Image (cartoon, rainbow, N blue to C red; front, side, top):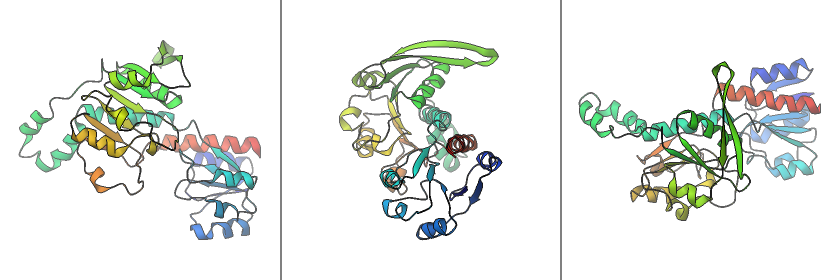
Length: 315
């Protein structure tokens, strides 16, 4: 089987597929040439990221394709209904992202609570002549130990965030209408384990009592956290969104920050991605990353392994 990867593919996955007798072609192709290339070369498998959008019109032209492997976290760039109509399977690497997203949440949390984002902006500009003043300005940071992290959406990623936060000494509250309670096991060196029994809370309780909120919500048509929900939070608290751009109302978030009714926000996804407004980019109370949740080599290897395993189980 010929498999085309338009946005690259980890060597781990290439080896797995080639060892099973498949041909993997790594080639970036313009959108208006994809259908011609696939049909002319009888490509049966396609591996894509969001940089290769596959809308209904394009998918309808792919006559030889049997499957699409989604190498991105969300599948918004693929018309899954059109693929189903064409009997084209859509494969997703659902588990590959867990650790990298969880680590990014902790990174944002530390950056905001210890003023690292602010110090990193100001030190290159004024560190050489205002060192003492900057030291005083950023000396009021908070430690994670003893604080409470609220997690909204308690699937695999939310659970991994909880494990990392608990390892740092944080308390955990979570809200998820699908999860009432569960056991979390923290694994430590020398095969040591600690088991925690966690019970879910109401959304209002999580928002109103936690020192920081981390969102791990799947795709939705409307905001899950808007102005009403943000107003429930403590003015000393902050919120982090690494999940889905519609999970959080950015305008309402900035309004709360401007009114000093929230301490900080952190965003890895944006409503107007990939061109978020400059006002948002320059806002000092926000910690920002350009959708880096899965941007580690380990994640890319896991994506390739997971998708390759699915492909080999089918073909």
